[in-house]
Image (cartoon, rainbow, N blue to C red; front, side, top):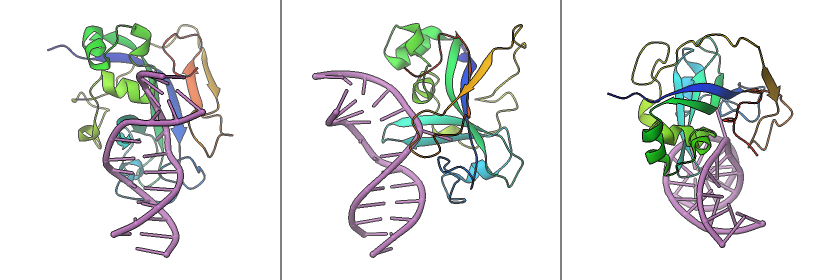
Length: 163
DNA sequence: TCGAAGATTCTA
DNA sequence: AGAATCTTCGAA
């Protein structure tokens, strides 16, 4: 069984009542409730009538917060990803929050699963970068909370999202 | 109930 | 620049 794998190269932070761009800004709802739960859990939501996005819950239980995974560098299962994304361009496979969920077949059925253990969907540690080169900038695609420099990406990585 | 907006992507 | 497309949320 082939697994679909990628290295996270871009993410954005979202918090709670102090972050107007966050789904948790106005408190807990049925959609965002996992943002208030245990850290390391997947928060997957559906938006624009067609797209899924994947977050990792980040804060201790009871405190809302999550990181939106915005881009991956494909590592394994690239042919499968090309089929799912209907493109052969390797850079277009996972360089956007909704693109990577399509490439990796991530849907709301995975909402709420613990990604700190080897599961259907999980995150594992990678060797540290020999040269630290993570940079931050303003978040993308949000109307409110543009001022917050909570987007982190690997500088120079060709698989990050954006224009 | 109803209506507006949305942590996006693709096409023209 | 505009459409696609439907869920979610807050107001009525």
